Length: 288
Length: 320
Image 1: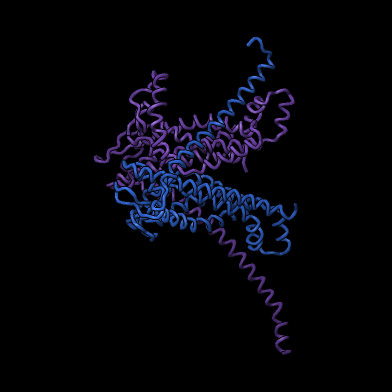
Image 2 (image 1 turned 90 degrees about the horizontal axis):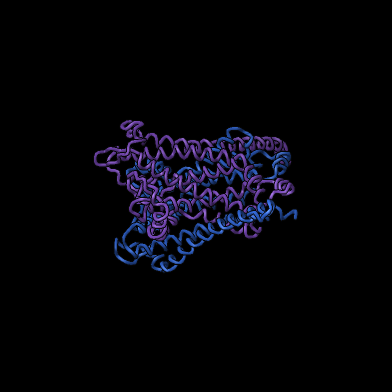
């Protein structure tokens, strides 16, 4: 150590710490990639035509698939989106247009906090509101839970997207005599549409694969169940049941299901990012 | 013909006026719809808190405040206490937060300050994508891959080297508190890294230039100039990650072993608030049992509202 001057020691110290940071960053990426690689490897061997098109077999009997779970996931997420999208976009628009009001600022904060509430608590909420009074589980209650999970995300991304619209655009429209509703609907929302779509896609990615609130709302089902008023099968619920079961065949199917979920979530996330890119190109396309 | 033309001419200003009035009414309806949606949103949020308090009323009345520190959990005798679950939740979340904060912040410093621009962008994108992976997927991997690794490698190594500590003593199970903490770490690292990276990249370049010009090394610039200016934001990011760890349900349930006992050893099975709700909610046979589970949900809700509220406030001061 005595062979080094202070300056050299500081330089070495700096390089050492940068290397440590680099190792940590690489380690995070490598571990997460290894996990994904493992799931893809296990999942691909599980996915087959019967896996995608058949109903589950009774407990312990080999074969069968998760077709009802895939359809159930689409139905539950779809109805949830129908509830969350209009409400979320409206609230987000309000928050952006009236961002100077204190009410809007507090509501925006509430949305931020709600986005982090444990999904299991929201599951209890859906149970108390839509399961207990009717005395049976239903896909609709699961959709409601998903909607509560999605709304804050939709609100915040809509708000952010509209806030990014240049102020001059709004002022010009108002100066031309357009009423408030037209300024908002035909100028602000249209200019911010790419950002809003991104938010919708991200909220879909957020709830796809969410399991906890489904345990006591959708509950799961062995059959083809298409009525939202009844208990319904769902892919992530099936993965959970299969994973903690003692049957090797079900374990394989759980990996297959996990792969399907990852693919769905990645496609949604990538589409969301592309939507941002296209929005940016559209906005600058005219001037550049 | 002429009569019609005259009539049309006479009606024109009137119709223009009525058009303007229609527009004004339309605007009012539009604003009202926006406000109504905000009220609906508030109603949903208020309903969440109200429903949980209402559902927990039986348990609140029966056990009172003692619910928080009773370690009894016996559905047969209807004795319910939250302590084992609070303990398990806090232990797993705190361990995962400490590990994830160290790893996540250092990784973020590298991505934002030192990585070649391309590498930083791709790695950052990758980590953000992985933050979206559903928890059931991590749970599945934790149960079949991580749990055996903990039982056969990590556990024995820790016991051999640090076995004098009570937390590393006892039989090593695969599904245990340590496995749960590790899987939570993997799940919250992306959150901390992504937010910290955003905070650091938002720091103006001239601060770094000033520090470097004064003779600071790149690491001193990053650690003593850039990082301190975003400390509050990073604390916020950690609180958000902590909130996520507290409420994480499915992954924890699959790897923690689900036993309502308080054990000093990290190698013993444990239980968390979210896991017990997930496991026992549909099996709750009596009203009091269900109510006790809902009260656990209420505790979880209140704690995470506080943690996440504080975290959001701190991050918000920076990212807008």
